[in-house]
Length: 323
Image 1: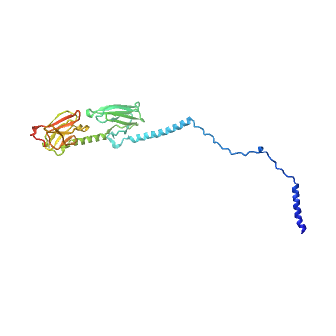
Image 2: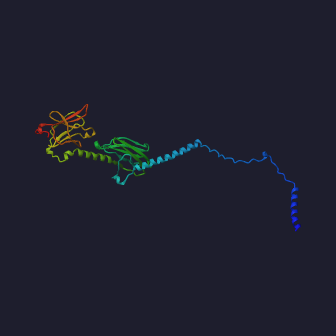
Image 3: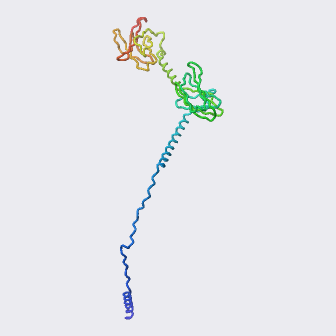
């Protein structure tokens, strides 16, 4: 038992002796200056952007201007198309195309070589000038027909060849016309003219005004009872009455048709003492209507330079007095 225990002890001593006799390995000391330095991460600077050249900037501006101009030109073309009236079969009276006139419209005219197209203006309308976009390849002239109030001006156009397109601008003493001229190989409009809805409306209003002005005479008055025994005297302004009359109950004072163009004069009744008193009256058309009779009345207008027109009922009517 004692030998078994000694053997491990001897082995341990032997190992210790061997370790003591082994030469020691000395650590080599490297000077700090010779040690490699740790590399620090460097910030990467991006390369500078290349400055745009003046030529490139100019090209960009040019493209922007070009795009804007294309939009504007497209807008002009669209406006011209929408404002252009083309010939319509329903608009022909025999061989004459009749357009309804309106300011700002463009009227299409088709022509052909060897044929004259007649553009007839309104009767009584006076031609001032004619201008065309192409006076080299188009023959443009004018003539007249009729006389007096029925005198009519005709613009004559004829192309030299087919496939042409230009515009025509006509000015008169009443209006201006815009036309688009197109030449075809064989087909041409013989003539064209216009109707004038605005003129018809003005004429209708004039008729209404005249009817309203004549209304006092057409409102049940008995013509046999009308008395025109009145004298108009005094100043002669533009509004001076044309006449005065009564029907035994009311007095009517008729003025020129231009009464509404200016200030209307008030009406005063003058008594035997010469005193004037403003009287009530109604304005209907170009008539003053006074709901009574009078012997003397005055129309007065102005302050410093007052215009006075006197209306006097003469005694030849049997001596009727004002009521």
